[in-house]
Image (tube, rainbow, N blue to C red; front, side):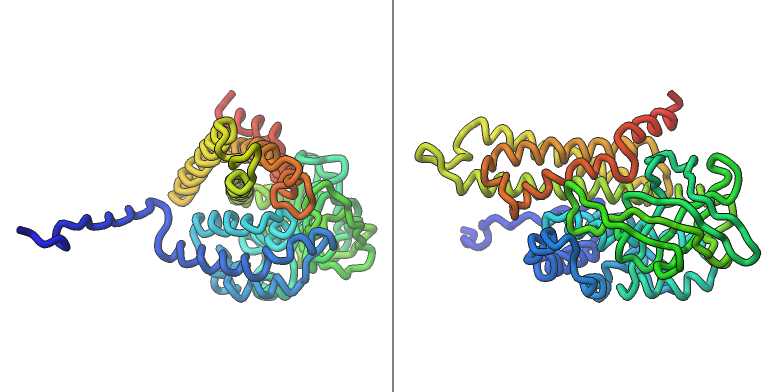
Length: 392
């Protein structure tokens, strides 16, 4: 007769993920510990202060967070799209979009430098940004333009070996504290063909900033920028004159994938917070989660979050294969951000008054949902772009 040990069930091996390797998971665990130690305990304090310590950039660089995806020769760490998804997801666990936005503002400010900048700029500027010593921001949006990038009005007039920049930028993440600004300017005629990119340092005469007060993302120093005849050396041109629009477009797919991952992550946080509260909260002598209506809410929340996650990972894989599924990424961003709005609303309903109090992750995320569906391209712009890509 076989021994009892021989008949004991053998635990099934967990199937390998089609997307994530052991290296991905090791990075996830390292980043999760970083968030738990360096961010999560302080987000309420930083939110109320309207900023977070500059030292956080250097700490993030020490674990390789800032360097992710940038060229190794300039201080970066090569990484695939799924490392970026992990980064976006794990940073959301602290429940503060404002911290995430400013800490990661270099992921939109620095890619044009890495892709198109002159060699001197790559060797000087990128290592400073990726080490956390300097902060990078992207300045495209204008007070009267919004998503209409091709018709921006900030003028850069060539005078000898300088450009003279005059105009304004609006809603700029890390706008107050950044050291380097990647700025879209008009150097030529109307439309996309007259747009260029310039690197503008914060201490140039005539360059000033005003901090903006916002509904959410309090810990992010968002600003309006003013350029009053700012002289910028011609060598600060990023890429080719009047070809800057192409440089702007280069990073949009990655930005929108990142925002979709962030929206999915914040929705997951709201789901987790709602489940935990429903288990702990007792009403009429029993746990809140014992009510069928609450369980059904939670199931619907999980269903929507899982649908976003599955779509996100499939599109990330396609991008990694060299595809450019622009329409699908636009639709993903809308799916992710509308899901976040819905899930945050349901979580707020489950938490009730407890969710309405400052200091709650759900309260903060609820306030911050709208910026996700506006930034990186509004829902309306995403629909229109997707329609054009589909030939409609």
